[in-house]
Image 1 (cartoon, rainbow, N blue to C red):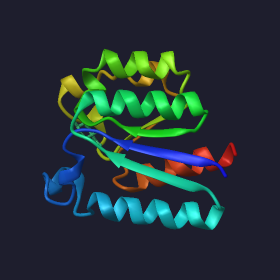
Image 2 (cartoon, rainbow, N blue to C red):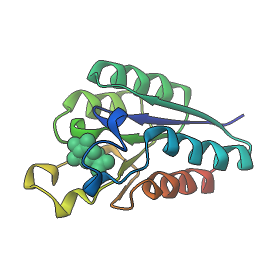
Image 3 (cartoon, rainbow, N blue to C red):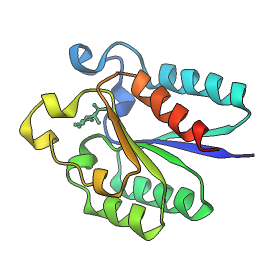
Amino acid sequence: MTVVHVLNGPNLNLLGKREPVIYGSATLDDVRAMLEERCAARGVSLVFRQSNHEGDLVTWVQEAGQSGAPIILNAGALTHTSIALYDAIKGANASVIEVHLSNVHARESFRHHSYISPVARGVIAGFGPTSYLLALEAVLENI
Ligand code: DQA
C-alpha cells in the first residue's frame, strides 16, 4: 500500500490557538482528520507527524525519502533556516511537496526565502488547511 508522509515542524502543534488571524481556527488534529478521510477514500496509508525539533524532521525526511514514499512537508519556521532539511531532502532523494497555511510571500521578508523550495517538487501556500489537501491531490495524481 502506498504510504504518504505528512510532516509538520515547530509550533504547528499550536494550530487553532496560534495567531488565528493568520493560521485560522482549525487544529492540527482537524488537518490530520481531513487528510485521513481523503487517504482512506483513495486506499492509501497516511503517516502524520509533528515535532518542534529539527533533528526529528531530518530523521523522518530521511526515512520516508529512502523508502520512496512521498512527503508533504510544512517545516514551519525551519523552512527559512534549515540547511539540514535541504541536505536531508537531497541526500535521501526525497519527493517533497512544500506546504504552508499562510501565504509566506505576503508576510515578513524573512519568510520569503525557503531552503525547501529548491529541492521540492512543488510549493503550495496560502490556502489554510486546504494547502495540505491540494498537496495530497498532487501526490495522489502521481500514484
Ligand atoms: C508556516 C509559515 C512559516 O513562516 C511559519 O514559521 C510557520 C507556519 C505556514 O504554514 O504558514 O510556522 O509554515
